[in-house]
Amino acid sequence: RADGSVEETGPVQATQQHSPTHTGAVTSVAALKPDLCVSGGRDKIVAVCSWSSGAVLRRFIGHEREVTKVTSAPDSNRVFSASRDKTVMMWELHRTSGPSQRFPGHDLVVTGLAVSPDASQLCTGSRDNTVCKWDTETGECLGRAAISRNLVTHLCWVPGEPYVIQTSEDKTIRIWDSRELQVAHAFPAKQHIQTCCDVSQDGRYCLSSSSGSAGEGSEATLWDLRQTRNRVREYKGHFQTTTSCVFLPPGPALTPSIATSSYDSMVKIWDQDTGACLATLCLEGSGPLASLAACNSSMLLCASSNSGIHKLQISNHAGLALEEVEVF
Image 1 (cartoon, helix red, strand yellow):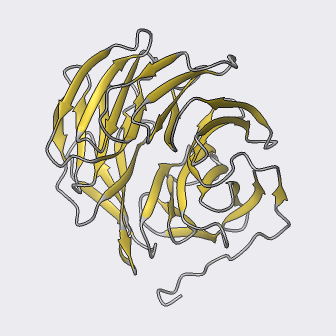
Image 2 (cartoon, rainbow, N blue to C red):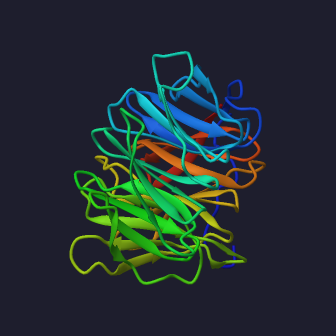
């Protein structure tokens, strides 16, 4: 490439193919522990899979339109899904019938989901400019806040804190205090739409990703949550909208790292501290990539428009390498 980066265009060994989890585009994927992931797709289905075998364990059907986001609380048997049908649903992993709770109330597509660490509360965001807080047991709406032009794109909960991070089409990243559902802080607006956010396990940093095209924009940004609350670093290298950004769990052979995915069909691993791109993998034929989930320090899941869920392995034997190993 003109920027001097070297791109891997395929796996070193044959990729194992499993039966597709969804019929059509996969819009969101999230890791569950242990050995489970949940995904949502354009086929309106929420699926629970074993990411080690690619086997589908549950398919939840209830949404009337495309599933936009899926999430779960750590060590919880509950998964949550949002949809273009304006609703959010809660599903029990060991229950095969319909949803155990519904959360209606948004006026447009729901595009953000964040569940509290104890799974007692849920925050949702929508293109209707609102953020809502819910009691997961009763389904009661505990609060609703509206900000003009705040078209929510993503939500994530800060571990161990009552704060929720939110990205928006108005190019702003906001920190919400979930107790009163008020904005506690807003970072300086970026130049492009902010598409996704994630928080480090220690709650010290936040990531956001940007829209873009032809190499303009498309960066991920690291923000300080505790001290200066300023921008720390940018990660530039994608050529189209960066759709997802995640912190990688710490590993014995891995420096603090982050991963990003993009409409350009590429997944990149970055050194969190220096901003250097450590590895790039192009998933040819996958179409735009929609979502990333980190299973552990060496395994990533990537949701794609054309070819299902990709399981990617990170190795660090003689330099960091990113390899596609399975598709389901």
